[in-house]
Image 1 (tube, rainbow, N blue to C red):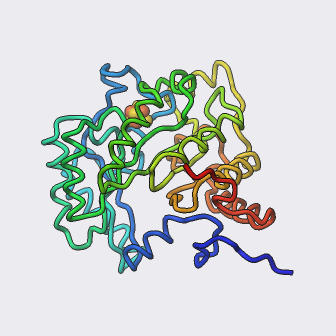
Image 2 (image 1 turned 90 degrees about the vertical axis):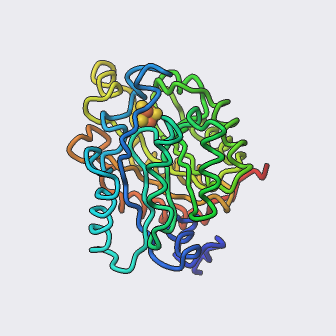
Length: 316
Ligand code: SF4
């Protein structure tokens, strides 16, 4: 007998709440993200919180696919938009401030970056990657005021809820700071997306499941999840060369992600289940480059196990 997908968001034939499903239903059309580099730095690099950055982070501030920071933002955006329009002629866009920490700096700099996009008719929403320790009240208040014009997403790098891991990867902030910031953001119309990494050194499966259990209890709207990428010229790559640590196989990652999806409330949008690492700088795991295979394997395992996002989720 054919198994029936019990998941409420089943019209894209997935057993989890996909980002595409959300965008299609929210905006009624294809929406493409255009990654930008707003010329920010990061408190974890300039000495405010730490030096050297998170051990997995590349010299481009994990913004490999963002525009060229030496070019004006609107030029970056127009170029990125042209590439996307080639693929999706009728798409609207989300300018995505991706590289480094895009709320680190004076409010006036953030305003100069965001304001040009607030009135553009083809901009559906704006996404801003940042850290929990770089969202002071006046920045939250101004960004929240922008929600009158556009949907604003704040993408918070969290990676793990375990402070021992955060210290090991030189994250430069605690999980308590994440919780406190998310609670302040939840009082506004801002949308919150949390970034998590599976396979960080020192973490076993139970720790990674616990991260998702804790994140599930926060008043967030979306999650991005991906496997740790070992990228060239990062602190993590140097430590791995000296003392290798186990990296998850594709099968292990797929199994883990399915368990994690079961722990997330169905309302939480899954913005991503695979990561983006520039292929010429990726040391390992090489299987992460075949994103379609990973996503298909997740779908197949969920169907085989007749499971779905939220099946084992706690409701806070
Ligand atoms: S991952 Fe983000 S917070 Fe960490 S060093 Fe890179 S830019 Fe800074």
